[in-house]
Length: 370
Image (cartoon, rainbow, N blue to C red; front, side, top):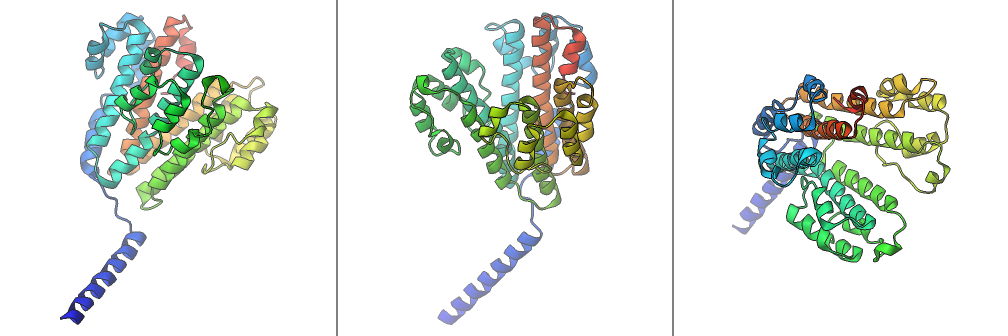
């Protein structure tokens, strides 16, 4: 009898080992993909069409508020209408709606799909930690900091608001102990007065986030591989935007400002490009598929860096949409929606702030990513 049990255990272990090899070679995507992609498809249908932005540019701030209050932002506009007005109302309502929608997606997702989506949305944790630290550093009030928080990641609204109430940086770092961000910030001076710059810590927060995200996305099967590559392309885009903003600033080379694991550009290549003239820089970027999106604005006698950055952001947006069309029952449609929704909220903010500042309509239009 004992030998029979041993034999069954041996067979079971052999079977599990065999199945592990099968999963490793032909990984099975775990998650409720049909349900989630159907829900996301319905949400994407609510996004503003491209031609709507042309209409928004012709409206006043109150008219934009009324227009948004008739659609997907109605609940937030009504809830905040008695406390805020004008541009502040538009920003708060759209941000709150974004946080609500992204939280919903995590809640109705399951298993491995849920984990990948949650880790992708943890970028809002990074946003919020930066917002809190910057607010403390600049002497903003607790209310001002809370209004800029977007609780769309893993850290809850309640926890983030608690962080805002902490006066000492050391207390904030201690509260983040156990998260992937705790160790990053442990080197921060305990006193706000001893902090010269947050840039180094903000850079490390971004790097830790992307390393953590890439660990969660398996390189197979095909949709996951495309998601993995998309994240690496996003790293490339972030790095190129950083490159364009700091090009020619020698002191920036004192620390590593670029995120590793880009798909087309290494940290060393980017570091070399910091001191290059624009023609040589564009030549070095020619191997990347987003080269043409940049070249049309940077190859001019007077390069338009702002338009180049907008162009490369649009290129990335299109890459997400292409992946979603190729694999409609994968994480890619979810990714496509999250990015499109984020851009919609950013575009509404650009329109509102631009009009409030009296900017020319054509200039505001150039700033949009649609």
